[in-house]
Length: 277
Image (cartoon, rainbow, N blue to C red; front, side, top):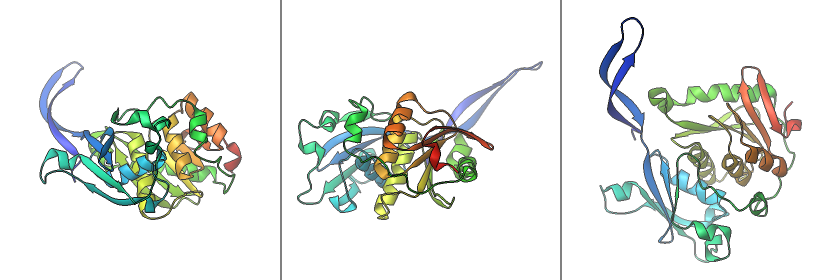
């Protein structure tokens, strides 16, 4: 689908001969997506339409609501055909007998039912890093990756962003093997959504966990980007910009290699430097 919208703008340029020109421009689409699990609204996330099923599956996996592809009986857009509701609502039906953290009133996820997830920061306010680490094991040391592969992966991300090329207003996440082979790239107005789409696509393919893979994200690396990497078993996360303090703390505790400022032939490794050769 076309994930952009044409808008009227006024272009102002300075200099000796200041100009004012009316024209049209392309902006990236941002619309709400309601995520329902077995008839109950779990979350409303602001996202760029497209690959909604992958986004939902990746989100449910990262939050620990599903633990296997077989936990999902069906996933589909729901509502009346041709309506905005159908385009922006996804219903997930769980397989018979599947229990989730939503079934436990004391679980941290219970309080999030129906909350809004923005395209800027995702689901915030997790009680502590310990809540997350209790659900996922510390990642094994595993395979290593060359510095050249990491920098090439970050540099190559821009080439896989056609939506950004048209609008300049969206993020991307790319998955590669440790040898540098491209696996999948998705764009979205929210970088955490782009990561969910990557992970969801691998869940559908039956490829989780992703122990021998590298995740590259545009912009910065936040707590939630590292959280989603841990959930998917991804040991290396690299970004163009800086990580947040909580992202560094989480990466260190979970044995994730966290790379920032990967530009040219240089990078800064905030955690897990032993994996970089």
